[in-house]
Image (cartoon, rainbow, N blue to C red; front, side):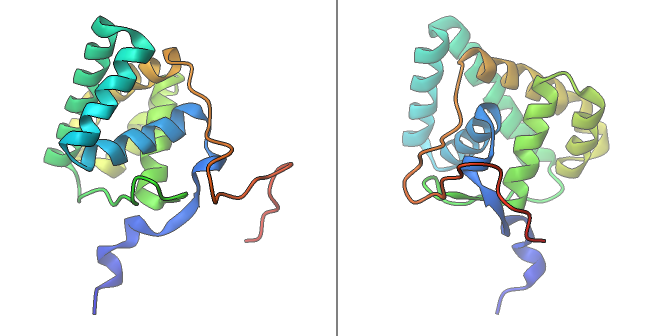
Length: 162
């Protein structure tokens, strides 16, 4: 029997389709990066085609450093769903909000969220990396995956259930 506290960060809290382009991309790239070398090569291809070789390489290095730092100094490992999963877990939602806040200049909120991911003394460093990475995602002009197969399609705002 698994302890509920071990998988708490993986609890589904929403759907990829509910995120904006930067947030959805942050979650998808995190999943791909952690999935292994083949998918890491796909991340590089996306960055290179979206930003060009030079800026794509910079974005890749920034993302690499962000992932490495989160792994090395994280409070605990970030839980992730499968690459093609349509829902997002609590840790992924936290990561998406972190990247988005950093990219859109909400540094104080980004720093606060960073302290949920890593030790407080490392928070300023990953916040800077997150801002650079999020800005690269914005430059790629990504759109949210609204028509992801199997995901709910909302005609308007979903009703709040709880």
